[in-house]
Length: 442
Image (cartoon, rainbow, N blue to C red; front, side, top):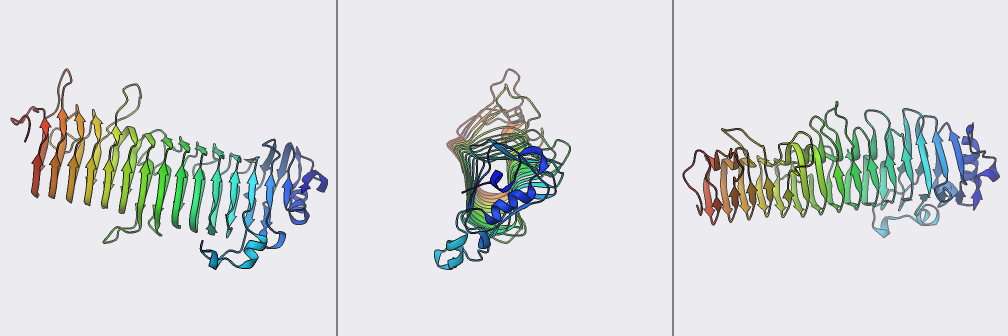
């Protein structure tokens, strides 16, 4: 191992330790130990894995801080892997010199508006664990090609600037990435963002992803999957708490792809067992295919809890869309489906949705869509109506309960249908609204 103070680093927070830390990386014994102290650097520390060999950088139990006083990444790990995750595509020099570079137990603080915490380029099995990154424009930045990275037990917090991002897959070709047990909070643009990146096998599990928003800017998201210029498929978001505050056009989770005939650019997703609250939209899905959303609790959406546009073959089942009366903030809630096909909504509880007007829309609004099932849902105290079907073809509405039992009921009707054909209603129990005569079992 190599202790950086043996290479002349001071660690007093004032001295420029860039050259000494780089010397330890280039000429040390692969395991670089950074003991307690504050190490100021002014340009990126580059770990050229093919030259220096597989490398670990340890902050001695979290007692060491690197302050990045210049632009770019504090740590830049660079490999040469150009294959896939298939073992047969990995060249011998990657296993001999580059496999599993690690960074652990260290704090990185940005002290420059363009500072980045850690950047990964063409790495194989990079592992970041127990790292704290603060005040950086980008916390962890993945570019070019990377395979099998693991980011676990990290705190990526309080990003710098209006476009701060916690974890950013930026024009990256990547298979098999796990983001596990991390806190990713207070980045004004996005907590996790994928953009221009072709990604397979993305797992976001057991994380706390919160308050990644800017109330004055549009298009903020806690998790933003932008597949409009690439494909992002085979992914899971599970057992996370994902919440923020209202921002214009913002979302807790936003997944969108370029429009195609079969909506194939973003799909094969599972979103399960999460708490998702407090944004303009809790979940926004646009041009997606093959997404299953189950066992989540949604709350307090300034527009819609779930917005689905131009999607195919989605299952939205056994979720709780409860407004939580002790939570404050602008709220409309409900589900909106537009221009979609093969949508199955079942086992939902939706209480006190404010969606729609006296003339149109409702707690569940479905427009210009086909092959729809709405079953076994409880829609309680909708402000205007439980369900509006507008130009919907081939739909089954069955075994749903609609109640309007407030002190001053406001529901106009349980269901409003405009146009469409081949609609089957069976086994429902609907309270009577102000304008309707049917009461139940229609």
